[in-house]
Image (cartoon, rainbow, N blue to C red; front, side, top):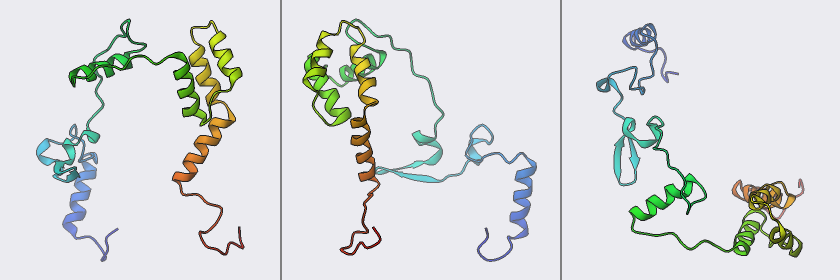
Length: 169
């Protein structure tokens, strides 16, 4: 609210007119002509960018549909491959099944896969064994412990007040 008493009558009249005209969001280019949009700027890297031109304030746009090819498991892989080739790079060779299993297990639980799990994985004839393993690991207690600890660390949680004297804890 105003820091020093009542707003001037001209400002109140401007608010009344704005409300009468539908109280349009001044940042919305649909409701106001571009000449009436605010000229606020944002610091973005080394350049100052007008707020209305900043990427974060642009409406979502759909990208062209990408179809997976024989070399890719998904349209996301094709999207990444297109950007790699545009940058003059190429894909790495696909990882072996044992490497994928170890990476997945370490990433989701922080632990290596057990010998029994390795046997089950390699003896599975299912086409979706990898996806099923992802779901099983995400439902495991180990996943919760690893990522719970991660987020508590980010929140700087501790069972002390950082002092030597923690009588309340």
